[in-house]
Length: 261
Image (cartoon, rainbow, N blue to C red; front, side, top):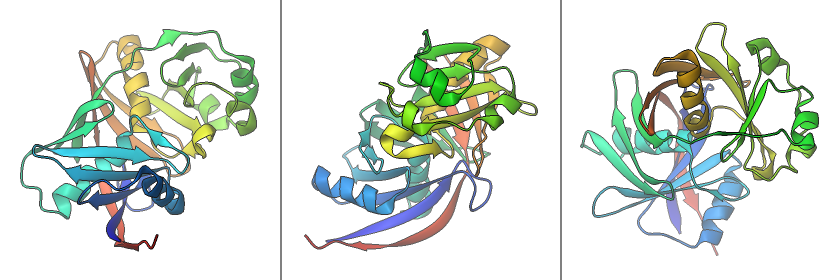
């Protein structure tokens, strides 16, 4: 079995920034076991697989540990591969996913993605969350991740999490956010349960925190920056129950997987 593979830096202005994702176009779905093994072998935070449908594409995402329901940066990477390398000629791509239909279009800045927003609810911080972060949250919420709000960008940058404690939490992961010094808000994202201790740039997390900051700052268009070692900028617009995420993508490599089973 031979499968084409691309590696793309998503939410990146240049190579070695943003979040690297692998993208594998498939003619048809292969076994989940092989998909998971490919993602584990790639050892990136996400590997995206897509199959052509009569209209649009069926898209799935795998971490080295498990399949996930929503991933922003790997969706951006998949759209980039379709537009740039496979010659997709329409203005908008429709991806059919576990989180519904996701649309990606070219924009003046890069690529624009329409994702469902997530409703976050106030939540008392569990002890593993507080002790795992080593800091008392200003506010704590829950959605598909724990959302921890701090007072400043400096506090977000100073975190040195205990991932063994965060791994005990029942939700997908932890998103820490605060007002930014030169952008509207900053964040860091930790997913040790998925074998991704710190994710470089997390599109899906912005579906949780962009609506929060839109309400807090009373503005619908925002710029977020994820303060990982690689860093990445995500332009956000909150429109009703959707969050528009805009970012760039940079090619890193392409190749061919040869799989013998």
